[in-house]
Amino acid sequence: MEKQKIVVAITGASGSIYARLLLQHLQKLKDQLFEVSVVFSDNGKNVFVFEEGEDNYNNIPFNRYNNNDFFAPFASGSAKYNAMVIIPCTMGTMGKIAHGIADDLICRAADVMLKERRKLIIVPRDMPMNLIHIRNMESITLAGGIICPAMPSYYSKPKTIEELAATVVNRVIDLIGLKNESYRWGE
Image (cartoon, rainbow, N blue to C red):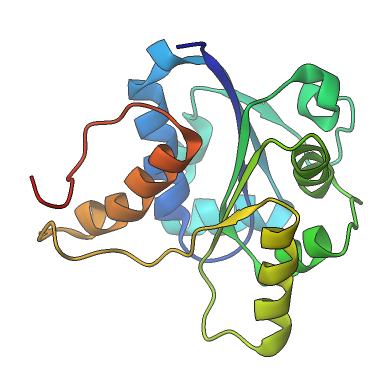
């Protein structure tokens, strides 16, 4: 299996635990990865530090890019990144992506993934949803993106908040196409 290049974008929706767990899982799966790049929106950084702490933010083991750095490699399709995950994704970011507004690195990279027909996985956490949110999800899905709401599953009988959040993260890892040991229905 060819090693993958992944972009992880973190926006200002509550649910930083999902981003932290994904980054921790990707670190454990590094033998399957060529590169992991991380970009935070300004609010994404603020919420991450508020929910997870400064240590978790400063100890991210991957290359980080500023959200206004249009020279980041994944701002171009020629860099051939395999997948992008926006986790958690605000409804505002999702709306910009759905309407082709690429005014920051996160939205530009998402636009690149869609135009290059590569995997764009969006993990919205906000709820309830209004009709605008639902239509934006439809537009992204029709353009080839994957909407994977942060809706944990319970059939693995998680005992901690981290185990519960990991049910979403494991699903994201499956969608990326990485081999991952996790609970499987029927096993």
